[in-house]
Each structure stands twice: as structure tokens, then as C-alpha cells.
Image (tube, rainbow, N blue to C red; front, side, top):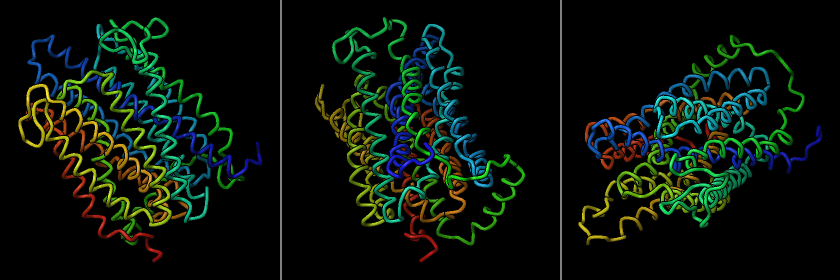
Length: 456
């Protein structure tokens, strides 16, 4: 395997997106996130809390848990990236964080309603999320070595689209074979496989082990075909002191690269808003529109399928136009989508009261899902490519560490703002309004970002 072709290497890199996507699709957004909110709210109501307030408080708990994970990632991401660049070794870190992904995801099995602990659930979810995010930093840093500068947009878009396709397939399998609906049968009309009992929510909790096993299996092509770059990178010992000193120098030099600094600031806000949409979309549908977890899953399939298609198309647009125009367009679309979501309730849309039993709010939320999948996927793919134009090619892991820092430095802000807004207002609808402002701030800061960085 020493002489792996570039084509195989690219496909190995694609498989990380395929393997890791279920953490976002199944756990964060469409199955476990809503399950956590539903179970935590039921526990609060059993303690005497009113239903609407319990739902808002459960959403707040989820937000606070993500806040802690986000702060952890923000602090460590650039440090670990700098250390990896100073040693020329990335794969050992990917192995380590892959193990955290597996342990965290698998641990969600032990979150049954009868002995549910929000703290235990958030602990395991946070471990897996940290593993996924850090593994992503190190795998993203391989992107500049996979092709010519003009091809990177297409490669990034295809990889992100391939990841979305994996998320769609994983979600379909989960809904068709394991997740029971109100009838006690899956979307395919089967009893949940392996005797998973819907009464104990085993059919839903299985999403944790399922995601862990999916990741372990589909990371095999990555570890077989993706090698260190350069391939003869020295096996130096990890020296935290050297890594920290080099990171400090990079931070000191950031004001001398105003385009990169502005981009990190811009992406800090718009990616935070996007993550807020992903994180609370399913919870919102379940709590505000009274959907079932199966309906939320179907919503996820539509969103992820839309993302897969438009990421692939967006990759070609990125290679032709560059990433900046796509980032601007996607932020505008997502701002409008956030406004649409806030306007929806079971009996109204855009503030207009509807006839009893109207399906318009549900239809519009499905439309919102398509827009989130399409614009969100393209935004992330184009943003990943934009970083390759702004960062130092010789310190790319560190650059992606800073990128993760910018994404996580305020990634706890969106969940925290949503948590606080939900708690104060007692309303899930008004709880998500901060996302609109975060997209707006990100758009404004893009004014100072040069499309090709400071080389212009």
C-alpha cells in the first residue's frame, strides 16, 4: 500500500465524510437530538413542570451541553493542529479521535427513558462530538494535497456530497429497519430488527451503536488509502512546547493577514448559525409542530438528499466561480430560511392564521429542510475550500485548527443564545431567532475577505 494512487487517495479522503456524516445526520439533528429533547421534557413533566416550559427547558439543556463541547473544541483545536504540523504526523491523531467518536456514539445506547440521565447522555454525546470534530480538522488539512488549486472546490464539493449521500443511506436504513413509528413498525412495515423494544425506546437508542459501527466500517478505506503528506514525514515526538510557540507566532502574525483574519471572523458567525439550524431543527419540528421522530427522520432524508445533490453541483460552481460568491448566496438563503422557520406554528405561517388541520406549516417546514440541506451543504464545502486559499499551505493543519477555533469560538454562542432565549421566553419558536442575526454578522464581515487571500 506504499504506492497508493492519487485517485484512491481522494476516494479514501471522501470516505471520511461518508463515515462521519451519521453523527450529524442521525445523532445531532434528526434522531438522537429530538429523542433527548423528548425524553428530557417527559422527565421534567413527570416532576410537575408544564408541557411548554418543559420542552423549552429540554431544548435549553441540549444547548448548554453543546456549549460545553464547543468550548472544549475551541480551546484545543488550534493547539493540536499546530502540534501536528510541527511533527508532520496527522494519522495518529485521527486514530485517537476516531476512537472517541466510536465510544461516544456507542455510549448513547445507555439512555433508556426509565433511568434517563441528561448528564450521562450529554457526556457521551459530547465525547463523540469532540472526536468527530477533531478528526474532521485533521482530515480536512489533507485537502490542499489532493489536487490543483482550481480543482479543490470540485473535490471538496464531491466529498461533502458523498458524505451527505452516506447520511441519507444511514438514515434510510435506520428508519426502515430499526426505528418504530406509532404503529410499532418501521417505515418499511417491519418489526424493529434484533428484537429492539419500542417500549424502552431501544429502537431509537440503537442509533448510537449503529452510527459507531457505521463509522468503524467505512473508515477502513480512509486508513488504507490516505497516507501522511509528505509521505516520508519524519516520525518526530510530539512536542507541545514547540507546537504552542508556533501557534503563538501564527496568532501574532494574523493581523498581517487581514483577509484570513476577516474570513475566520466571518465564518465564526455564519457557521455557528448553520450549526444552530442543524442542531435544533429536529427538536423544533418535534416540539413546535408536534412531529414524531419518524417524521423528523423523513425530513432529514429530504434535507440530506438535497444536500448531496447541491454539494456536487456546488463543487463545480466553486471551481468555476470561486468559493466566495457561493458563501454569500448560501448565507442569504439560510437567513431567509431561518425567518421562515420562526414564522411557523401548527396553526399559522408568516403570522397568518390558517384553517384548522392545514398542512401548509408542515409543507413549508419540508421546504425549509430542502433549503437547509442544499445551502448548508454548499456553504460548508465552499468554506472548507476558501480556507485553503486563505491559509499557509505549509501550516495547513494549524490553519484548519484556527478554522475550527473560529467555528467553535462562538459555536457555544448559538446554542447558549437559543438556550437562554428559549428559557426566558418559554417558547421554542422565539428561541431560534438569534440565528438570523448571526448570519447577518457573518455576511457583513465577508466584505473584507479577498477571494484568493492575500496573494492577490
